[in-house]
Length: 143
Image (cartoon, rainbow, N blue to C red):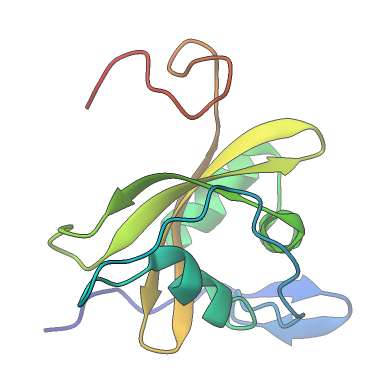
């Protein structure tokens, strides 16, 4: 069973055409480190391994356009640093998570999933105080 739909949208970054892939080295993770227990996947490690092979779903590209940010903005901000907000190891579509990163001083949430050798960005949105606490990591309304 295929876990994700193929990405058909093309973006242009630094003069290079790509299928929502951006290939510069990963630089930083700013969040708290948590050791994975035996047999548990450490999602942060899996994200860092795939930062040179990021793909954005069509939905993510649409949301980025609605929010006035680009796939390149997301990749650059994640390479500058991100924090793990929520981990979804039991997601029926595959292990995924919610990250907080910052784009032009705006708090941005990124839902992503390591899948085979890529990091799939599933959706992106600007975090607001209505739904999140002052740290943009604590939900005002629990899931």
